[in-house]
Image 1 (cartoon, rainbow, N blue to C red):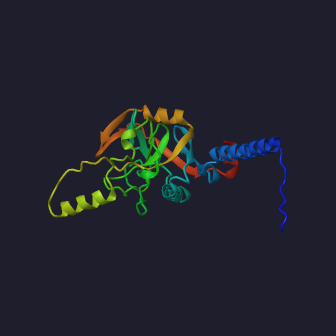
Image 2 (cartoon, rainbow, N blue to C red):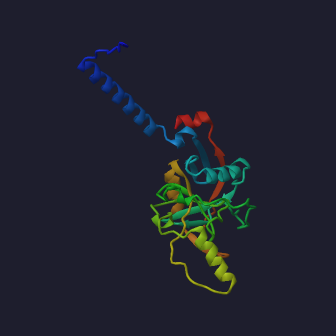
Image 3 (cartoon, rainbow, N blue to C red):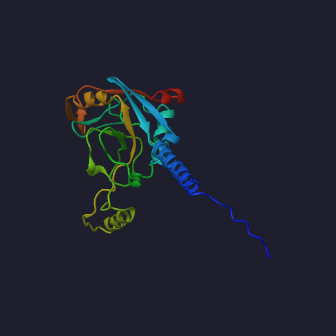
Length: 236
């Protein structure tokens, strides 16, 4: 007959083993909460304007296509001397596509709208401006001055299928207003320093000129947008 070895463990042994396992699990959970995807691949830029600097953290993990599109323009020095052409106090300040003479800059292909990734248009967040079509954002972006929930994606948002059906109806000369809400505007970053500069820009006087509403009376330019180095990011 085969002899089976039966080890003898005390009650205190099992208690210590359980506490040790629990402690390890708590440490693991804490680490997972602290090390978010955005921290694993952190990107930051500084928006240098004629009214001061604005430092922005980009959401590379949750809005990867939007961030990549934005950085393509940044790396090509594509935001040099663009103006803030839309300023609505209490709502948004918008820039990215026009020069001081109101000429429009060249654009790349539109980027897929990532408004459905859960990021919200809260105060200090950056999001892509776009036209009526869901996937029409190119280079213009805005900074939220308040929590603008009406710009967020929701369960009641129109889908791309809704948009396709509406386009087909319009081609046949039929018009039926959509009852769904906006798909939303893709948030891709947040201001971490320089919100006072944002608020200063928001308070300038505006005019309606050449088809542009809410155009600042005083020209406010983006001198340049550039990436922060790894060392500079770590300093934040």
